[in-house]
Length: 205
View 1 (cartoon, rainbow, N blue to C red):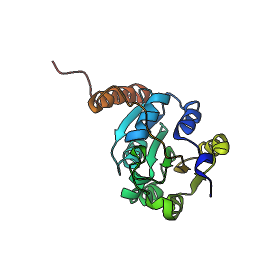
View 2: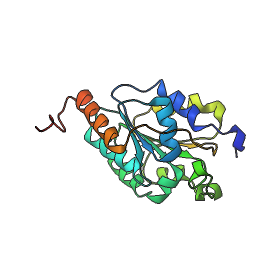
View 3: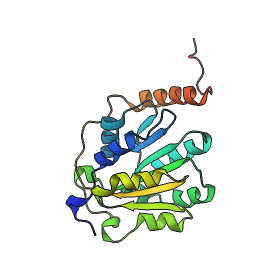
View 4: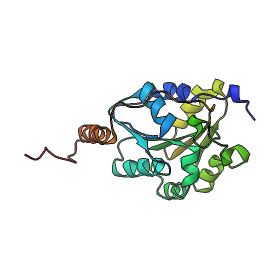
C-alpha cells in the first residue's frame, strides 16, 4: 500500500500524457479537479470538459465507436466510475481498440473539495471490476516514480486499455474560461477537420 505522499499527482500524469497526444486524439474530462487540471496542462481543441459523473467513459466510448481512426481518452474518476460501472462490460464486449481510460482514484467523493472517503478507500477495486468485465489491458498506478513507465505500457497496447491511477487527494485550480456550448462547438469543428466529415454544416442565414 503506497503512502499518500508517494502517490502521483493528477498534474504529473497529465504532463506525461501531454507529450503523447496527437492532433487526432480526443480527450473527455470529468468534472471539477480533473477538468481544471486538464485545462491548465493540456488545453486543446480536441478536449471535451466538465462531463458529468457517470458519463465520462460513456461519452468517450461513443466517440471511439463513431471515430475509429481517432484515439479517444477518457479521464474518469473513482466517484464517476462507481456511479455507473455498467459501462465497463459494454466496453469489454465491444472492445474498441482506440479507447484509453485513465481513472483518477483519489479515494474521496468530491475529492477536490475534501469530501468523504469513497468505497475505493476500503477495498473496492476498479481495476478488478474492469478485468472482470472482459477488458484485458488493465493496469494500476500507485507510485509517482513509476508514472512514465506505467503510462508508456498503458499506451503501448491496443485498447480498450484502462489505467487506474491512485492519486493524491488535492484541491483544484482554475477551470476553462468558456461555457459548455462554446466547448462543444470547438470540439465538433475540430472533429470535422481531423475526420474530414461534416457534422453541423454552415450556419443558417
